[in-house]
Image 1 (tube, helix red, strand yellow):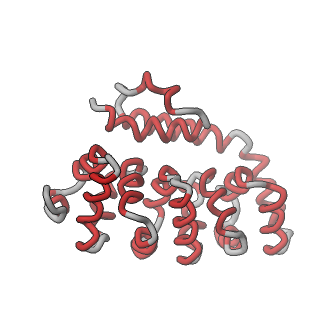
Image 2: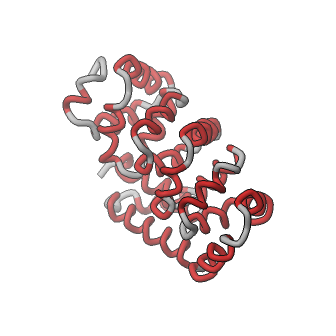
Length: 229
């Protein structure tokens, strides 16, 4: 088993636990699917630790006007608590709150969010807001957060987000994508003229192993779309 088959999962597990990935170097020979299951279990444990309290807060939030709730979320709750509440709040209300939050703060919340629990909210946020957050996360080089959201976005939203990401960012996100079975579909959304740039970015930034990992997850038809391979 190669380092590049386990490295993405080690990076994501380290992110969940807020520690450096070097702490988990001993896991390099563990099956990536086992690491993914472990990460899911850890995430569930963290999110469910105060579930009853979060549900009461979500219920109480119905009494507040949405503009006031958005302001409280931004100025009082902070990104972590907002992310936790997003998993239990009514989706339509969550979308209304998200529409009123600045891009930078939405990006902060996205870092802490479990997309599995807020998929309905994510799908309801306006396209421009999602693209703006993707651009901000790209500026921060936060590939892990972007990679966690790809599987929860409609194709047109994925395409719009890819448009604001340089080729080197696409390689980084593909490497840590949460569901790599979607890579073939995502690459199929790219215009043909963009594909040479992806390989050039890999060569220019010494990321050929990431390019090889990307190609390994593509169907023969989509691999054939890449030049010089």
